[in-house]
Image (tube, rainbow, N blue to C red; front, side):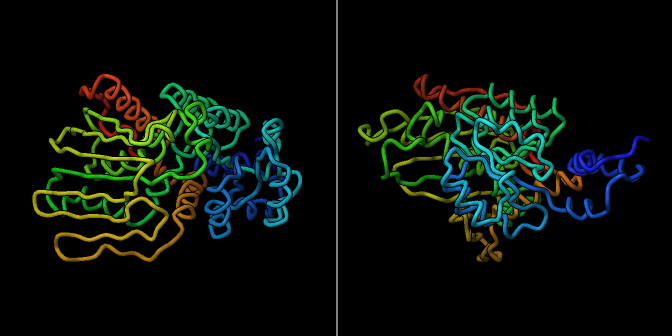
Length: 379
């Protein structure tokens, strides 16, 4: 077997279990120090807005299996400030023009795309072509077609793809999934899920620009409500009907303000969801044949809180959801652990989003959804 140099070593370790199997039988041309180095994967954040600044970068100071290795920004002032704050080497800072050079950087194993929605597909695909694993912030793209393009690019490059769905890694959501799986409160009959906040800032912000965001509240907070309905039933919906409401058209000129939708599921369960950029709401309620449980808040950065019909509280120690999420993805890459939020989950949710918009365009008509059993569910 051909000796393995440092670059190939890092590539194989980043591939996870399959790479480890190859390495176990390979003669080493690299020092054992590299093995220690790659016990933690290097993550590059693409886009240094508020989420990267106040959530992801601080979380990467606490993660066990990954660390902040690089940044991609179009603002030289941010590059300098981040380099000073986090000790990022000059060679690990990129802009949007020279981003593709990241392919030659062995320090960076994972690229986390945290850009306006319309830029997700481009940079996820470029990251995959550079041979880097990809985490894509929600929503995956601004169309199902873009989701397919991202998934195909990652498959062709043989890199891992995960969604930035932090809630799947935190204990309250995992408890909800367990309740549903074990039928702790009987068969689920009804779910109500709300995810909303009141936007009162700059009306020119990118989230209110359809060209950049692809949509309004539904593409932003609505994804959380859709997710709650799905893991609150343990099923994918078979149909959806939806309505849109606007009370501040002078502010929401280009994107949806408030949307409500009704889902039907194969088991007979139903769900109502609501999402908005014009009021505050943050909860999920699940009613079964022998009781109910609730999370409120259900989808913010925590701490979350819950209760059940049996008088008990749902309570866990608070940890950074972003820390848990990124460590889970790193363990998927390094050790072959299940991918809690695979790319197919992002595609499924975009299929539902498109069906909701179609229903609204058709006056609330019921739109049929045809998912294969288990499609989009993570490990």
